[in-house]
Length: 258
Length: 258
DNA sequence: CCTTTTAATTAACATTATGTTAATTGTTAA
DNA sequence: TTAACAATTAACATAATGTTAATTAAAAGG
Image 1 (cartoon, each protein chain N blue to C red):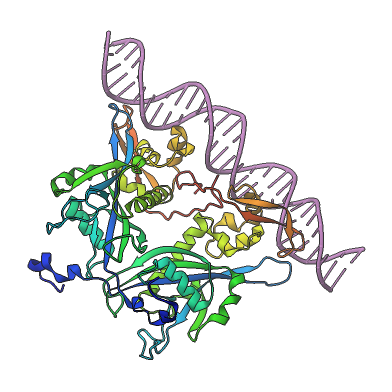
Image 2: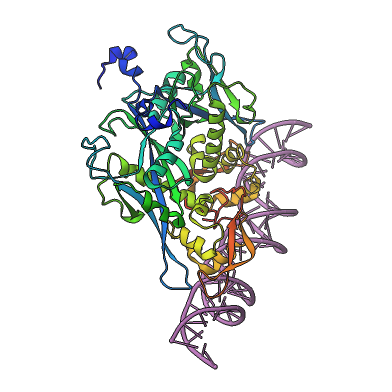
């Protein structure tokens, strides 16, 4: 729109470079609520958002202040966006060494009023038992976990509403089509704990069904029973523990049941 | 490495911006070979690469000259990388309006000797019947289709060897787990044509088996028979044609057969 | 015109997996 | 001692798959 057609081949904007490269992270965690002792938990998938401060670190009034946003920040030339995501997560929440996955790039002209800023988006999985590490490291910014169901209603910075929708789509797909669910679980888990993780994002009848799911878990090539190891976390009856094993997961929509 | 620790908070490199933002495209096509009349084709998945010219458009000696590379180029501030991919494909090969999907970002420091250049990578699918549009629009650069099996041996520019490996992984996954195979096929196709597309990237026994696959295709929720429409493209016996329909494809590794 | 050839399709049937309901197990807690 | 309960096993009807064989309809060669 700035240039007219004749000049296109020599348009100076052809040689412009981006004004910034940022890394944003959709941090997911699952909180579980124990309704009573010796029963499986009810789990909920939550997304961590931060409230943008009124002033930035130099004391100037901040852009998109007061709105909720994904944690993130600028990438430096000495690191990848994935490394920046890891660094920023540690800086902002104190949590290190967690699972990260790239899922998209946001580069629509005008998405950031500060200029031509490209956002590389990731999702992260923080297992529930590591959540306690968080509080101590939170700096002033307000941090909150939101259930993924009622995110639409909140005022979100930049194009983060759209990024978050995609993040939820991607983690949902990955939970069903890869073994990433292991990132939400302890090393050893029961069938009902795995089931509870999956039920945070699906209503698949075959996963809801206790008998069928308990029977099926024993035949999955990427899960094995931890021989002789049981727990009473979820039941009075000592319950078999399982673990994920490395196994190639091949499947196709052309051979699956529908 | 450049900055010492004390200065970190004020390191000027924290505020450096990228030297460029490029869009690269792994263009896939399937070529099919008819061994004889009235028989299904043998298909091969091919990747289009271009040989980098000795001189750039200004006549200076080109970087990574003579090596094979993915088509692509710099993104301008007025477009997304996806739009740039579409534009560049049309400029370089004359093919417009084809299927494009983002699959990764390449931003490792040092990946491009010209500076801090971020590559946004896509794959594209050119259906076989549109290949003929190509030749006329090829500019001077050498363009060639390589079978995806023996790409390792060629000398590739920048980190394109790695990008190409990922592109093949992604298109393979998508062919099996989404309905993207339709992009390689005409609107109406036979079971053996769909099968041939899938067999370019899988050796799944259930897909190889003619009887089982022909039986299964009739029950898939995202494919329907084109009532009364038959062809003799693949057999003397007039053969049923099918089409993809829009239907949500839900599946999970926890309910699939293994 | 008759016969062979061939890909697609249907048939047949044993095997395996799933959906569903019911029974059993082992432990806690009243 | 007993009720409660999540996990597990059992039982069995139903559905899907693997496998082999038969059938179909057209082409092509004699």
